[in-house]
Structure formats: C-alpha cells, structure tokens
Image (tube, rainbow, N blue to C red; front, side):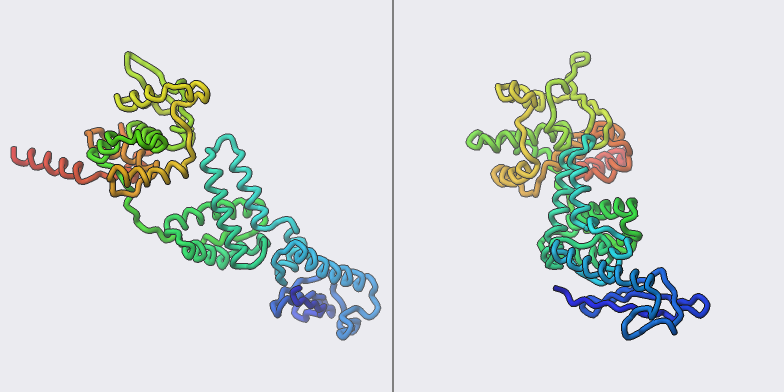
Length: 394
C-alpha cells in the first residue's frame, strides 16, 4: 500500500473579503497534489490542529466526504492493481477523470473498433493490436502495474515508450510506426476530452533513411525459374509473390482476389477491383505470367474457397520470403511489399512507362506519392544516360 496522507488548510492567496479558501492537499510517497474545495472561511473560525471549521457543520460534513472519497479512491486503485499517485487521486476526486478511463482500457476499446470496422483492412486492426501489445508490455515492465490513468499520457510517457521499443531491438522507423499509432489513440482521447494536451506536439519523430528492396529483371527471372517443387508450401508463396510482382497488388487486395475480379475486354484480360486501402478502383492488364499463375491454381481448393490463390497470413508470408530468397540466391531482404515496389520500378518504369501510367496502375491518387514510392535502379539510370549520350552525339 502506498503511503498516503491528506491535509485541509487555508490558502491565504485565495481570499474573498476577510475569508480564505479551504484547500485539500493529497500526498502520496512525498509527492503532492492540491485541490480547492468550494468553501471560504474566516481564519478565526478555522481549527488548524483539527483541520476543521470550529462551528460550521456544513463545511465539516463536506470535508469529511472528501476525506472519505480520497481513501476509497486509493483502495480501489490498489485493488485494481493500478498506479496510485497524488495527481491521479486528485483528478478522480475532483471528477476531472473517471475510474474507468485508463490507458490500456481506452486503447483496447479503440483497437477493437479498428478490428471490427468493415471499412478497414484486417491488417490495419492487426497493426493497432501490435502497438497495443507493445504499450501493455511497456507499462507492465516500466511501471510495474497493469494499467495507468489516461492523464499519464504525457511527454515523459511517450519518450520512455520510444526508448523502451528501441531497447527491445526495433529499428527507428518501426518505432516511429508504433508512435504514429499511439498518437492516433491520443488524438481520440483529446477529442473525447479525456486529456487536454497532445504530448506529441513537441516530440520529434526522427526518421532513418532505409533502402527499400526492389528486384531487378535478373532477380525476377531467378525467382521465377527456380524449381521449388521440393518445397510445395514455399512454391505456393513464391507464386503468389510473383503474381504481385506482375500486378502490383498490396497484400490485402491479392489475398481476397476471386474470379469475379477478372474481366475481359477486346480480347485482353484485366484485374478490376476496388483497392481496400484507398477505395479507388484500378484496372490492371494481365500479362502472360500472372495469367499462367491463375491457371496453375485452378484446382479443388479454389472451388471450395473461391479465392484465386491459397490464403496465408502476411506475417507467415514474409517469414517464408526470407527462406525463398536464400534458396533462390537473392541477397536482399524482401517482404510482400517488395513485389509492389518492383512492379512500379522494374516492371513499369524501367520498361519505359511514364510516371502517369505507373501512378494509375499502382492506384495512387497523387503523382507525388508515386515519385516518392519509386526507386530507379542502376539499369534504368544507365539507360537514361545512354539515351542522353546518343542524342548528344547527334
């Protein structure tokens, strides 16, 4: 049990005529918080030793109720295995906050809403769940308690949260993503008037430049031609990854493809779908290889599930891609998103497509987004210089 004491006293800086305001001071482990009562009293009518009015029973009754509420609040916090501080008790007693507004409880409710929102992808809900779990581990290890009052979402909390994530081995940009999601939760708490200030206003998110993997034409061929029949599970994942290299689909969109997404116009087959992330429709012509991959999986499993390709979690898929890269001999750290970047950069840009076409096929709504997204490789840059040189020679 935390060491708690309370004291009622007169604040001579708060006066009304010859009367002074009665204050309550709450002290927990030598840290104090003060709360003004609604009463003034003449100092001559105040019993300092007993911390009560000498004759005014109405004032004394109110002070007794406050005292009782302080101790009840302490007991309830301790029974719930939650942090007990003078400020938390003061805020609850003053009804600035309620008992049920705690960081993890609020975050859990927020995350559940994301997970159950039909307009959001399952991946979005899963990402918030990851950040919730990180926050829970941080509070448990750093504060030795099961939860903290939402008022403790301050600069100190988020700074220590970032340091904690770094200490677990996460890279800076991954830490920033957890910060970004926690910031969204905090903004929601501000909208609900649970906290008044955004601690991220003065908290800089330092980014580290990361070279995102993009496969070259040679690496795509190496991936495509390698015989993985000895590893059927990896072969299925490789094929699905290849399909996305030639179509540029995000994980969630590729995962939910059915035959209904294949349309034909003037002898050309297209994928036509609403992109889950942006809600924009995209029409992607199907090249020979993705068409062959669709035919390859026209089997009993598709008849049962209705999906074009076997389904697999993004986490398992990315873990398997590491093994595939090792087997095939690609010395790059690839993830599912590598397929989308490869489609935009290698398949389209390095084949001579202009950036407007690339942007359209990727389903981007802004050319600037596409410019940031693309990573022209050495072959592309060499060809640019070669073409420029040829023109200069003429």
